[in-house]
Image (tube, one colour):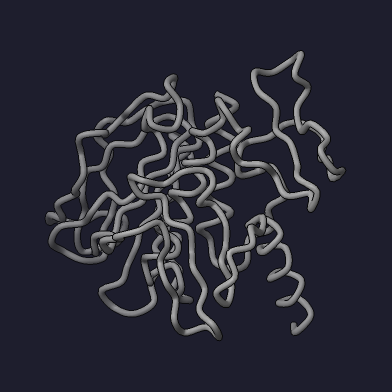
Length: 256
């Protein structure tokens, strides 16, 4: 279960408020020493299937991630909901559910009323096919991310794979006016939203509010490892996303 624990920790770091600090290789659950030398293997070919290698600019060559494609997709799917759901861009935050016995927590994030997203994290080794959670609003909630899907690893549990919506009912729970029943796997993260994910017609979500525009990589049905790059101001130079995050963190801290 070490893979699930690692991915769960990564998702929590990405979906909490603030600028996440993630080191190169975290997006593919790397457990090897960091390397930044031209054309040096990222993994020992004698110990693992496939080689992770770098190009002349020390960028990870995504075509070499091989069997770790599932971990990569997990991270890109988390980034997808983070970028597309406005609730993750707001300052609203409410840690409203803490179950110490079952090791389950839940928090809400929102920008304005109607943009609420709820992140539920199971830090225990027990899956819960039916688990009640408080909801701040009525109606239908949509499951926008399920970290227990076999899409990410064949040894995951697929808990709740057929539960794509959550219906709010009364009486409520967790000091909320409503409650709903979710399904969550062991050592897994689930995200439900008041809104469905926007339809993406290509591999990039265009943010026209920045100077020159910024293309965010989106993990849709046609998404591949090569798409996991940023295109800034019309340039299609591949830039490791972890370096972008670290740079943004440095800039932010400089103004604090």
